[in-house]
Length: 295
Ligand code: SF4
Image (cartoon, rainbow, N blue to C red; front, top):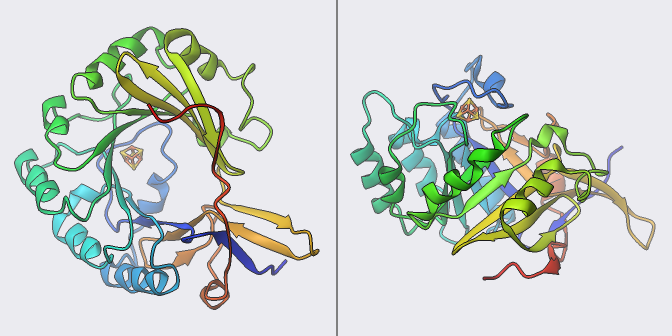
């Protein structure tokens, strides 16, 4: 079905897949296969697509992910420089231990670009899957930062408090993440039968919930540290008919693939750019649904 597009005020988040891989093999990774064949990967094409989406939604959020954004600082610099300052910019990284580019160089990059980067999200898991740079290095990242931690399969629940103390030392908030390949519209807001949520509620102080059709966050406090348990659906388009009987594809995320190709969903659907130029905006439906999330 060919529906007109709708998105939230400001525009759908644009996720850019950097055109170079990480050196890891995390068991829950859904991106790795996209880097198996790098034919057609192009920084220039990605930059062209950044310019296209900027011309349509000049204030949308932009997320660089991978692969590993910090694996090639020159290319990351070029892509960052292509994003005007009207956008918030996030980078998902392991802040890697890698040959040819040491921690000092990566830290200098964060210092140089701190006015351009809203937050750097560093992946760290309770049991590590990758060779990790020292915590003190993560603590020295010059931008705001957050730890992203996937609670995967039978994660070691008894290590959660130590993990939290580890980052509290640097005052870095943690986002715990559900394995989103398992999320469905039925279990997105499920509480009683979500063992991870119940586990977090036992160990930490539950403060509140915010969410929208697509994703949510259960907020917790441990001593003075803010933590979130994040769940999101494994796709990013919701088909909905409004009160006038018009059916829309409501877009939450747009992707720029490693080749520069624009997609309207994580599921391989290409973006119709001309249609997106006529996108209808609605107020963002993310709301506080319970308790408080500001503390
Ligand atoms: S570091 Fe990220 S991209 Fe690389 S294997 Fe792990 S989850 Fe996948």
